[in-house]
Image (cartoon, rainbow, N blue to C red; front, side, top):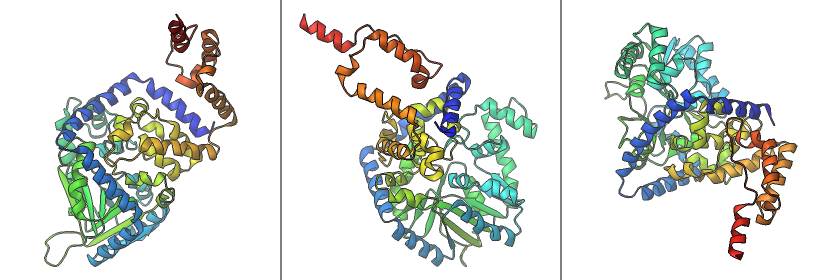
Length: 459
């Protein structure tokens, strides 16, 4: 067992046994579940919408190179700049002269998981630039010195009281402030920062090829404000975000809202098309789009895993996953957690480091059921397990044990070969491996149900 794998199991055991943490997580996810039921109910035929979205994303991924070239051409026509980055370091190398040229001292950043992927905040700090997260959840975890816990709800693991204590520590606010008052404090705090920022950073929910447009979805107005005041707008986006046209947003925006937050439509849906034109009164003087690969083409080259590139980052698979609900987001120790993270992280981070995540699933199929673009996640997880095994993630001892167990599980006659006494002894030895130290199973009966039923039929 690798060190990363052992750390994962150890951390999972600790978190799953933390009842306070699980209570907070389950409470927050339950609120999401209630909202999503209403969000999906607005569809006359949700399955048809999901199938259509899946088809468009499949076509986009199949023709990704062509669509990205069209997107680049149209961004340039709109007065923007486009850079291609193969790896995370390439993005940082592109940004270095931009920061120096404008003598950047502070930047404001809307929520962006790809910026977490490249460790943007750490890079900016090393260059003496203050990076300020403007999404409320991201603001909270940045203040706490933490990473986003969830790809949609960064502070899902924190209760209102946790946030109140955090703000009291850093800002001296009253511990009795409610959620509305805490939010108002952050809003007032950030208003001044927007006007002082040298650069505004955003990610992208969708890249629209035909128009050379960047679509950003949000609920707080922070992304719009992050681009309204600074003279430079930098977009960092994964190449898989490409779709054919703005016309497709009428399908994807409601699906993303319904599955991500349960809304009919998110509060703010921004479309950025380039620099300020002569007839316009506002807008950035520079519009820079950095298209990041970072092994996405490696995923694209795998005929099975490429379906994971259809993901629109709604977070539904995380909220539905029984494993995620028990072990939380930080246990994965990757930018992308939950089922989709368990599929793509081994490729993005390497199988030696993250291949074990493919096994962090019960394969119950809930993630696949709730996915708005119909990604066959269970199929991809099984495929990844095979790749992880080929990479040597599974040790010789584990392979031997799994081989013996599979030999018995494949045949009912073999399963019934040994009685309850032997099975109980076997379980006592290997229980920690199967179910951990915090749970107990009932003893096996002397005879299996199958054997008892056969005897009953004979009577």
